[in-house]
Image (tube, rainbow, N blue to C red):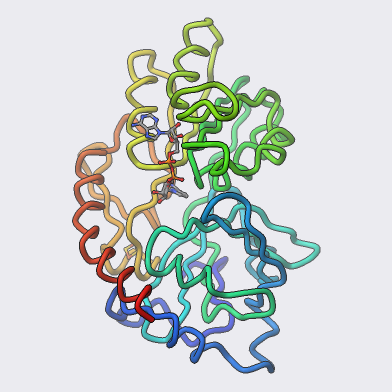
Length: 315
Ligand code: NAD
Ligand code: FES
């Protein structure tokens, strides 16, 4: 583990062999949460609120992590002793308050389990900050593309590019108005904000990639495009920018287990080489990523994830 990483308050050591995946259950989660006492000094959920459909924000007490967190980094959570580990990008951090902000879309068994926690509960393990921080340069104009819950993940990156003196044009998109989050925070973090929804219920109708194409067509000189969102969106962003040779960085989000480069769960193919997202990334040159391989690896977990979700609902 690198010097700047912290495992807050749990018994999990990433060097241990990983537990079996997808064995989470609501009942065991609540049973495993520490009773009110010393362990609640860290990883305590200080605030929770709904920010979009099926999407919650958690402000978590994690002073050591907040002190070291940089834009682009993530944490790995574990909610129960025998439960799976899963990554969440650090959407914000407050070094003075000693907190980190996590935004989670209830999409799988673990995120559904996280959703059952409430203010005052404690998350069993929070390990981080993990991954390499985003390389923040002054390149003139940066376009930040955030899709769905990826909007929260791109927020600290957009803010850092703006603070570094760039003109930041952010394009954020969601399926529909009720799924769009952080319009206000992204407006603050950007020089210009473009909002899209697939159904046109708010902002421009269409995909974020259409708006990106318009910016390119307008002749705007773009130094970097940075994209976070569903893998298919990041693939399509790369496809838009490749013919113009615009530097494009994506933050990948494959399955992760240990977060230390030892389990191989997060391997991706970049420029013909195998990379581990947790230690070599999560940011990669989008034009070098083998998205088709990544998409097929992600779909390989779908059946197991579905079964785990069903078990979670049964509890
Ligand atoms: P979503 O499916 O609602 O898509 C969000 C937006 O992405 C759409 O509104 C659209 O503008 C764009 N998009 C989707 N498909 C596209 C396509 N084929 N072509 C062009 N643009 C397209 O998003 P969601 O349901 O919130 O899912 C978010 C996903 O992001 C999750 O799968 C999650 O794992 C992933 N995620 C990734 C990271 C990361 O670090 N990479 C962080 C958080 C979430
Ligand atoms: Fe295990 Fe990256 S999560 S190698």
